[in-house]
Image (cartoon, rainbow, N blue to C red; front, side, top):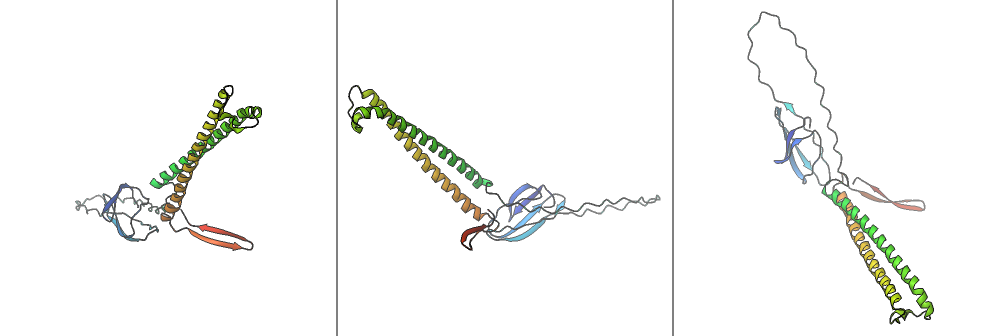
Length: 234
């Protein structure tokens, strides 16, 4: 629009009460009438046909309301003084509204949260895996002397002797901690996979629906090389 501060309605629905000179909004496909009202100016109105997945640019130019002619002044004997005419600068062309980015709006907030949760889950999984490996290594290190002294029998701690009972209790605790850490790491990996897949799906689905033109996928073969070309805007 050529002036800011206008009241903008689309098909009778108020969209902005203090509109700026440029911006964008989403509407359902079909025929819509965009009307802008500003005190001191004639209403600016335009009807457009909106197709799904395509952007339509609307330029509304305000025209000042004609002023009432003043009452004729009494004739004066003094010669009239010529007034200086000041040329008004031409209105600046409307800027092309930028397409919505992948992190704009509610979908963008969900994507940011999804990326953060996936990163935290992967970090937790790696930490839990490292702890599980440490517990297993420590358990094997403490069990090695008992195995050497008892013919490498793995059942030494199943029914330990009184002298081996304290060492076996510590070894069993380490193995239990190893299993718990391994299960926690598995849970983190599964959670990261689920949230990551949902986030990637959001980029694919919402990105194509809100793009200025659909994303094209074209297979390419050149000599002994093959690949896929992606073109479009998300």
